[in-house]
Length: 486
Image 1: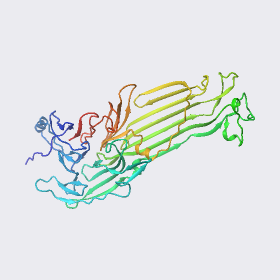
Image 2: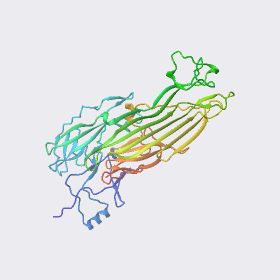
Image 3: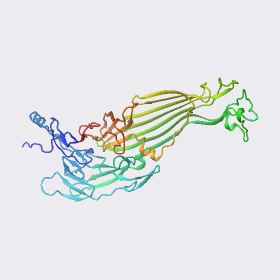
Image 4: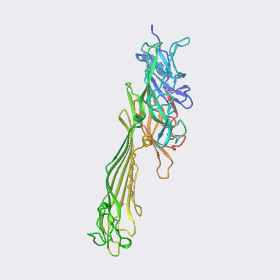
């Protein structure tokens, strides 16, 4: 007997007007739930693909239908039905809705009240817990659990939940800051469904590794004139030397007799990094748990060398003077990765140069400043003024640094993480630049600049809806009207 397929053959994107766009160009009503951009792949093990004849395929196409052996759940909804949980495929070929309110309810049986059983739920206490208040960098953060899973394995046997805190820069619930992850594992068959919950990533693991390195060679030096004049003094200049070479009680000249200064020689590099800051944990197509991480690096290279003697062309007595060229080069980098693969890197370099050899009248120096970014923007400025270049050393990463990790990333849904930053050119409008997109299936191209700002109501700028299709691997138009996929 040829049994026709039954189920839900209508698939596509759902827009803000509650219309499901079918492959044949037609639409049909579909009313998604709140947080509909949270999507999960549902696939019962062992269900073969639906086989259709050429004639049946032609009829399906004309009617906008497509028969699949898997589905997409939006939040807790499947094909318009609110489940208040997710579907678990048991080894005995039964399906159950797992509800963390404390029950497992039989799914997919026609007629009558579905079978159900109590399901004890106990969250782990070996790390942070919901209700804890964490002091990170002097700011209190309340630990909460995101109401929906970060991801669910297609057979429903595992689900990942996120512990998070609200970013106080935005309205409550709009920008979660991940603090830890927990794994719910479901097992058993009819009448004996059980679950266990374990800590998947601790707070320390989630915030990433702080790295601080200071390889500068630093010396306190002086070339100040002494009383009596320092041995070796020539043309009113005392020699340049270590400050510690001057014995205790050294008397320094004052007024017109004083030449030179105390200064710091500093040459070398510094690094302040947060590595492996976890933004999300997902199941890849093979069912393996993969990390979506961000590396935030600040690297500094300074050269504030020893001073050199140089003729003073502006001094009436043609006295020599001390001068040097100082440079400071800083690179800031935000590297988004998924499963160890680079998604995209935001970077910016800032180079400054201060030249006191410049023979201008008075305390004027030649200054250069140049910046460059990964998107090709940059600028070079040269000035002659009295400003002085500061070394401005790096600080070691704090817990607050680890929490935000540069703050140029956002979670746009349960399964999309992107890099973004404010953007403007000259007197143009405020804009937000998006680059890179990490999903459970890897890297999905995303690049664009849109008019708008990052504000208390829009932590991701003008990108209002973002969702991922776990069947096709596509993401919604960054500023389009797609709410979810079916």
